[in-house]
Image 1 (spheres, rainbow, N blue to C red):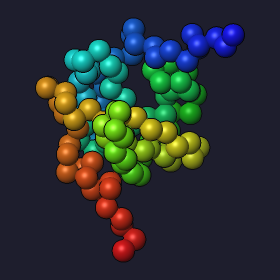
Image 2 (image 1 turned 135 degrees about the vertical axis):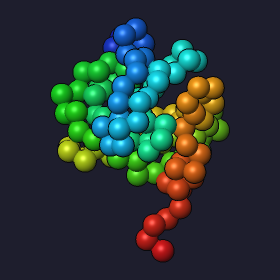
Image 3 (image 1 turned 90 degrees about the vertical axis):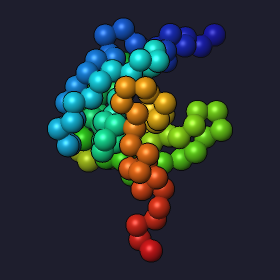
Image 4 (image 1 turned 120 degrees about the vertical axis):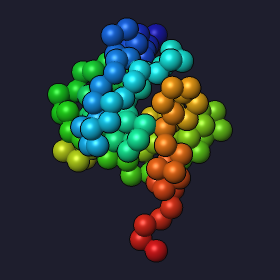
Amino acid sequence: MTDTSSRRFTVQGTNNSFLCQNCGAEVLPLTNGSVRNHCPACLHSLHVDVLPGDRASTCHGLLVPVGAEQSGKKGWILVHQCAKCGFTGRNRAALDDPRQPDDWDALIGLTTRRDR
């Protein structure tokens, strides 16, 4: 039997406000029980997790939003790439947060090809 406890989302103590390391915006915690890991204004994040919510990564590089994907189950998914180590990760967009939703225009901007 596989131990799935190490894959669980660690919520307690991780849904805190923070200042965006890219644009300086104050980022408020989500209110829906999930954990916010990116700035709702510029969509940047920090490479602080190995597994979602665990804050176990030692990299701490800037995660740059490089794309967005539509998922039937999860809605919009942000794709980030770490500017320090090259890690690529995905995280659900928080468009439905009542206090500080992700910037729709910034998200849609990630879906347009820049090399045309």
